[in-house]
Image (tube, rainbow, N blue to C red; front, top):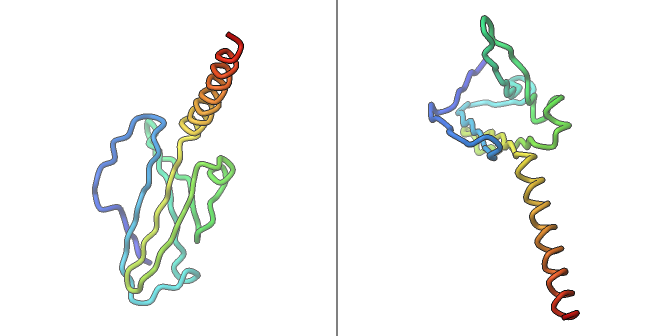
Length: 117
């Protein structure tokens, strides 16, 4: 068993920001079935810790998969391996799409107004 943690860096993000979490490890002989890659999330409660599995062997687990916000990637250049988990803010994407649609609508209204007046 190989336990690997992040490099100890701290990620400070605003609520709703996208984030990419990375995990690099070295291993002489890596086989995904003998050494499955598992990404787990912990949430500290008042008197206990709740664990949720996000990824097992490159497959996102529910409820994380169905949100469409998580993307996992795995790169290997033995003996160095790199696992990354990208979490996209659904709120930011929705606002961006709404903003783009609003800009197009306003441009169309301005063109129409310019022709009418």
